[in-house]
Image (tube, rainbow over all chains, first blue to last red; front, top):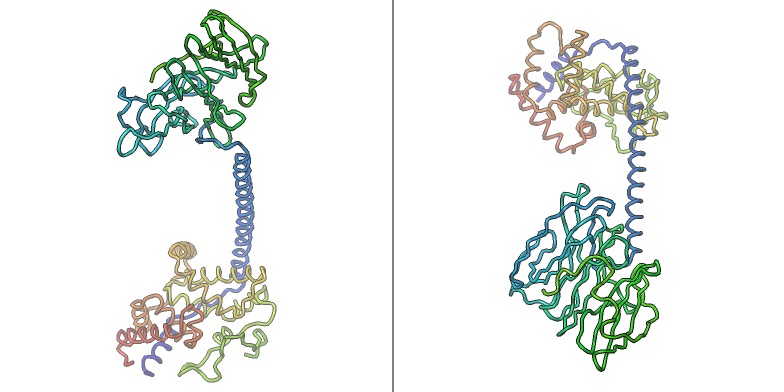
Length: 316
Length: 199
């Protein structure tokens, strides 16, 4: 044991041969290094503080945005998309099979297949033409569910080169043959079309509801105009010899009104008309009804007359 | 021990043996490494005293491990600067030589630091590894040391050159005493074989 220990102790002592130090020069070197480290540490501290402050500010902004968004009315569907000030791209409409029972997938819409699609074109975002659709959710067994939804194509990126959907609903459709996207009126006259959707169809009367796309902090949302009960408002068009109904927009007072009317007749020539005007604010608010008598050829306007847009689908 | 630079107090948990460890007699520099100064921890006076005291042996120890005196000088100077800066921030360093040895050994492992230090030394042409005339026995121990892994070189130098005991080596290298015993055993075996000595 002593052999190797002694040898190592002796040889390492000889091998090391500590150089004669220059304490003055080394001290200057240490001082310079300390000064440099101090500067680096202070710089790092400042940078860290800046990062923390920026992160805090960014976090606050995100939270503020989210909480402001939480104050908005709950929407049935929304998607994060660029603001409506951006020009809408000329999206190509998706191809809808002519067979309403054919099940297919729509990229960007949902993870489930759909069927029974219908489509119209309109300025639903206020930025230019785009397309609105009504789809029926399909199941594994095929096109057999009672769940319907409305969707509008919207841009998904700032450049407007990508497309997604803002979805509303589910729609209250009872008859698979009578649930389709109907017209693109501009009910409130703001330059942005609403989506009129037929949700029921009688022998001669078509019943529709209106959906309006809005852009908020959470992106686009698609919500129906609702009544006092919170349910979607329904409006009728058409009728028979003794019962008529219709809708129109009235700008005669300088303030846009949306009017829904219903008329009944016992003889088919003279009708008792009840008009329900709707004040347009955030949505539609029913005002005092007006009753009048009119002949069959002098009934109020109908088919969304004066509202802009057009009825594009009258049958599914 | 009585030169007044270092107080004779031993920090808690830092056992100072009353007898020499094995056959190894402590040297003055090693004694300094085992005790701590009273307040303040590290200041300009402490740095200057270190430079005129333990510095040459600490540099030589690091150089033996890394086989580069330039790297050793650079690492020790950087460790001293860090000790000074930390002390200014209120951190207490009980034993400056032991702390500097540990930090310098860690810093010297940096390949980038080695390249920079040797480049500067080359420009000065004043700091080559053991640049004296060849010495047969010394070259033998250098070659034997070169066969050891870095951890074994560190333990060997701390043990046989600085005279640290197992507990002190474990403290400096940040491992258990059992690990140091094993490390030293393997290093001694390798060195004995390389040098033709009996264990």
